[in-house]
Amino acid sequence: MRINRQEVAEALRIAFGALRANAARGVLTTLGIIIGVLGVVTTMTAVNGLANSFKESVSALGSDVVYVSRMPWIIRGNFFEFRNRPAVSLREAERLERQLARAVAVNPSTSTQRSLKYASKTLENVNVLGTTERQMLVSSAVPDAGRFLSASDVQAQRAVAVIGDTIRERLFEGVDPLNKEIRVGRRTFRVIGVMEKQGGGSFFGGPDLDSQVFVPITTFARAFGAIDRNIDIAVKAPPSMPLEDFEYEVVGEMRKIRKLSPLERDDFSLNKMDSLVQMFNSVMGVVLLIGIVITGISLFVGGVGVMNIMFVSVTERTREIGVRKAIGARRGAILTQFLFESSIICLIGGLVGMMLAIGVAEIIDRMLMPASVSPGIVIVALAVSIAVGVISGIVPAWRASRLDPIESLRYE
Image 1 (spheres, rainbow, N blue to C red):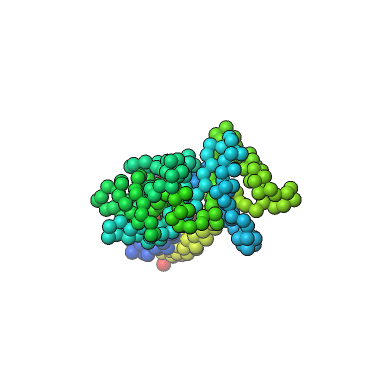
Image 2 (tube, rainbow, N blue to C red):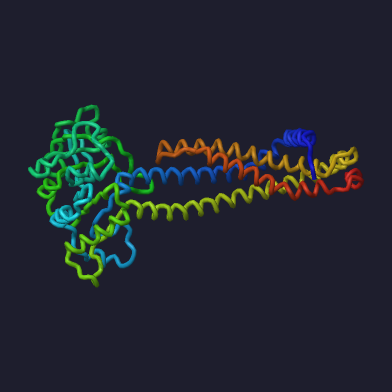
């Protein structure tokens, strides 16, 4: 069944004419498609926004860094088995640093939450991270103003602090924070640096990297008490060595430090960014599937509505079809006419749904997380709209193309 350009142009002209003649009916028919496309685009945009926000949050962990901790970041199995493990200590971090000569950096850290106060302003439940100067080697962030902690700060247990960008905005509004004194809990610290803006604190989770305060880990121990119950050791792999191979070396050295026999299980955990990303991808895959199924139902209902209207349109225009066939119109031309009509209805609905989705994405971007409608999502949404139109219109169009011209002319 070959269709020439003239027949295509004629089919488009008739299809648009029919839509203009029944504009109100066409608008109501597109509502299901509009809602379906709006749901599909919003779901995909939200998932992309969550993915970007989450990856931004965990990027500071480093793709070439492993973390030795008492407990895994993602707990599978008996929680109490992990809870009863011995804590990772500063002494173990020092021994691990001596034994991993090829590691770029071995950095112990621990954290707590304390109130932060400057002048009359107070921030509650701020994350305070006790760390060393090697934090700069395992993290991609650098100071935007001032400097980071130094080895002498750690050794001398100085009461100095480096604050995140959000802390600067909320606590030092319009004031240069460098060399100002702040109260962290009940202790006074002097601000020596401000970190560059890193992002984080996504809707899905992840640390708010801009709302942290860095202090020397030795000062942390003196100011906030014992820290060995919550130490993490970040170990940065050498650039010439695959991370998977380096992990075995870290595990082996930690087992030696803890004097574990070959038959004993590890009483520590090795964590890395990949495990969080894999968990996130699994969760978001399920979320995306559920969202697509729900919005697919809307598109299905909209497609049924389009099919119903197309059957009505075929019935109403039976005599028109008979006249066209009587003067020489082929079955392919009739089929194309009604397929174009159903596809145009769905395409219009898709375009309206897309514009609404762009508005929703803008609201999400301003209020929740970074989000935007990518060109790929636009192409997918419009392709789905046209596909729904073709599928919904093919049966009515086939019926119209098979009508007998004599019977059609007799139809009243």
